[in-house]
Amino acid sequence: MRVLVTAGPTRERIDTVRYISNRSSGRMGYALASVAAGWGHDVTLISGSVSLEAVPGTRMIYVETAAEMLGEVLGAVTDADVVVMCAAVSDYRPVTEFPGKLKKTDRRLILELERTEDILGRLGRHERRYSLVGFAAETENVLDNARAKLKSKNLDWIVANNVGIPGRGFDSEENAVTMISRKGEMHEFGLQSKSSLAVKILSTVFAGLGDGDR
Ligand code: CTP
Image 1 (cartoon, rainbow, N blue to C red):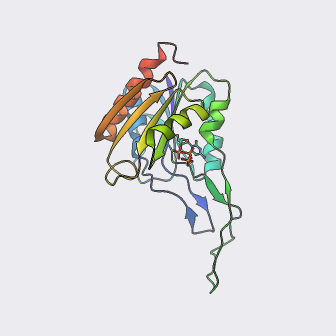
Image 2 (image 1 turned 90 degrees about the vertical axis):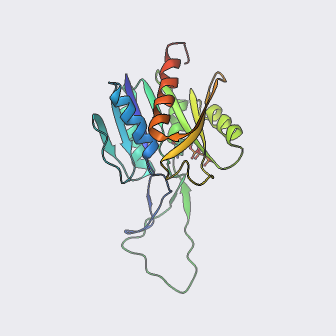
Image 3 (image 1 turned 135 degrees about the vertical axis):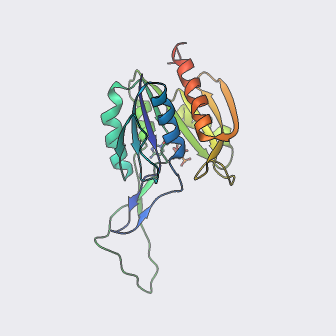
């Protein structure tokens, strides 16, 4: 199988030394790539800026911004069998990048932001032969919001996680998730290491490939 995984945060530049980003560590995506490669699959890992070692046995592509991630995903997706969009892509970027380092003044500074493209949403709108898996990072109404994303982005699976609880999810070693399929199947995986979750998430996705999930 050809598996494409995205991981980590994107960074959207404000000036030469500052950016907008989020707390994603990339661990979940790296764990997914590592498990898939360990099972002998052909894995491409598109990664935002993280402080993790490259995953052996995978094709690593590093990106900084949401726009760069979009470009690399579109390039790699054509021959994929499974796409897992685990990256925490910034929804907004500054309209302009200030040249050099922005100097402070005594006045307020207003940053104007514009939307980035929804990479997963774009993949979901395309005619495709691969299975498409998204993540939903939520702090409230976790399952309802995840189901809404599953539908609006036209996914095969969504992996819902509550990122509002300290010690799990963003920037943690562990997480607990609920997977929901387009057919309404639901699997709950309680608090455990991200490597262990990666095995369960990928097993569930691969098990669905055979039974006409798409
Ligand atoms: N995603 C994406 N491109 C974006 C934003 C998100 O591909 N510009 C993907 C993420 O990788 C994830 C899924 O969409 O797989 C859901 O991301 P999430 O941050 O939970 O939700 P959003 O779609 O950004 O919606 P909201 O911020 O309103 O919750």
